[in-house]
Image (cartoon, rainbow, N blue to C red; front, side, top):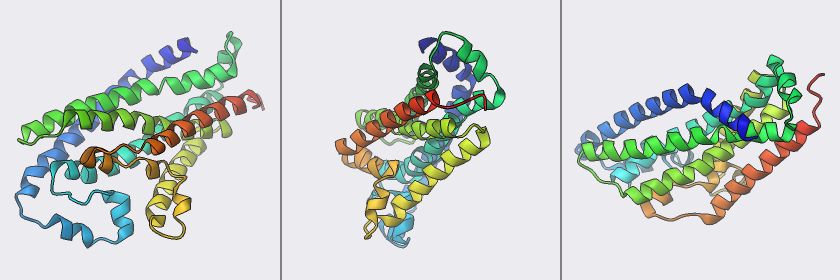
Amino acid sequence: MFEITAFETRRRGRQTLLLSTLLVVTIGLVVGLYPSIAASGVDFEAYVESFPPEVRNAFLGSVENIGTVEGFLVTELYQFVWVLLLGIYFGYVAAGTIAGEIEGGSVDLLLVNPVSRSRLVVGKFCSLLPVVVVVNAVAWLAVLVAVALVDETVDPVDLFVVHALFVLYHAASASVGLLASVVVDRVRVAQGIAIAVHFGLYLVDSLTLDTDYEWLGDLALSRHFDVGELLVAGDVDWAGLGYLVVVTVVLVVASAELFERTDVTA
């Protein structure tokens, strides 16, 4: 399993570098806008209240005071890019792991080696974790530097906790894609399923909040990860994090068990 993880991790080196670079540029652009926006004198609270509740929940998060640099980061960077887009991205990448080997015909060569199907699935999943860790570590440092360059400050410990816990969130997102990769043996279909599930549940989370159907949104990963509470208020939702861990473990185990029973030669 560790050989598979190490090999796949090396293969993802360029992908990790490109993604990290893109996110650093994004962080620089977003943070660079903050001084001019803060100096504009705009009533941010009134601006936020002008949006429908569904839009606020989906794209602005739970932060009430977006006039602070922490609130600005949550609404303009983390809620959309980290929660939604990166969640979709890691699910998309994971969806191509097993399905890609099956569609490309290379899975038979892998299984000739003394490695079980379960170890193959777990090894493929674990190869995504270094990417998740590196991306969030680079982003943590980039945010600190960018904020300092505009003469603002963010608590480095709180920011570290945010990105450390984002590792759990993105791992859970990847586990959704991993299951799709085992269920469907076509890469594009598996990736489409992963995107649809993540984005669909994200919308359900936003649209059902504070309604009679709020229980439907409890299935969404985003419902259990409130970056605004973490960065602005410093509150950790331990039950929510427990849900992310359980989802990750259950989906990885289910993927491994399902692949053990899948006829890849059909």
